[in-house]
Image (cartoon, rainbow, N blue to C red; front, side):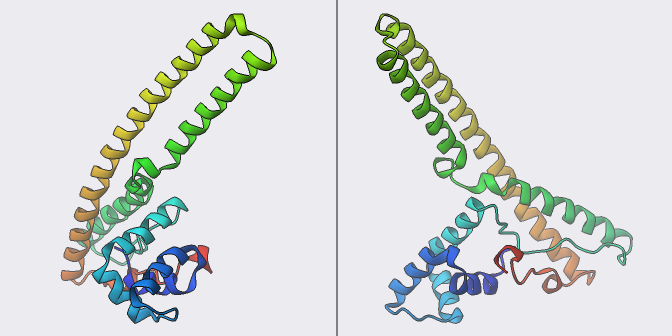
Length: 201
């Protein structure tokens, strides 16, 4: 559901993807590249497309480059399937954040930030407030916070894995449904493509 022509255009023109563009320039050995060259590199180096998609997820931009299907003019079975596709597209957009590797997710950054703050507070209470006689209790509280952070991190990691599996399955199912709807001549997939991202305009 990703529109590669749009991807190539955005990599070339939007600063958000400068790192991906630089990698493409290195591969091609030149600084000026056109969209056709970018498309070719994306097909031979799928990791670069993955980097583009990951950047989008990190910035809450969707990699689902399809708009919802207008169902009012469709009849019976086509309308029913189109509505299901629209529901799936909405759920896929909501689940996209779980396609990011947990190790690179904002959740893990927050956990580490909280633990750093707790460690700083421990040092503050012991040293600056002269609570050395309480340091055993304070350190035990800090150790407890590490255990809680570890438990929460594992729980979130499992949540990411579960939701990513749901996303992958629903993605494939939705693509198949769109293909079926197009074969029945109910829709044209090309009419659903979102050519440009409003956030980049």
